[in-house]
Image (tube, rainbow, N blue to C red; front, side):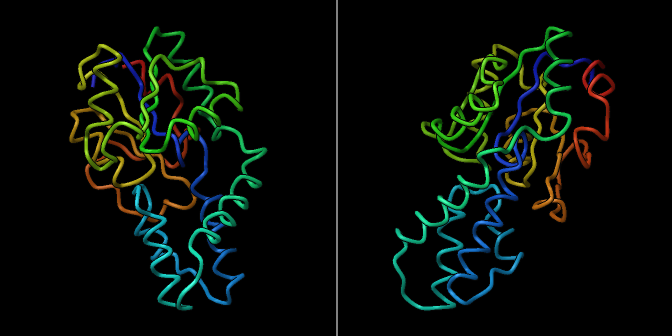
Length: 216
């Protein structure tokens, strides 16, 4: 594509590797209850809003009844503790800086809730870098295209003039359905998944210098 007008980033697993932290927290929950979480079960929920329901259903198959609210609180405590010092994925700041130099619009498009996304962006000091932040509170989740459609509308750019960055197959599906160019940037927890439909796949933000990808 020619030089883009905007860059749109997913949040979980993409700007920050919350996915790997979430996987470790779930593995610890399963192990604390005397069972094991297979990676294929985990991957079946990656990028989906109902991922917790999928994992809780599998846990119930393994150990029978349990207090789902208690498990959820325990998992969240583990996750929050592991993310206290988690920063942006390597190379992300270079992309944000390059976009600013080139005058590109920046946005976040996430199925997660606003309190989660905004809280972490504020914590790592980049919330102010984004012109638009669209979250899942008021939109159907990915792989539906609604979040991306709302984002490009708020940015005031054509979908075809924006590059989306995603770390999960549902995210890629969402971005492409909305008409954006999409680059898949897997994290360690999603690296073995298949990213059909992505226009490009890079192993990390450091694999391809930002200026080569976004300057046209």
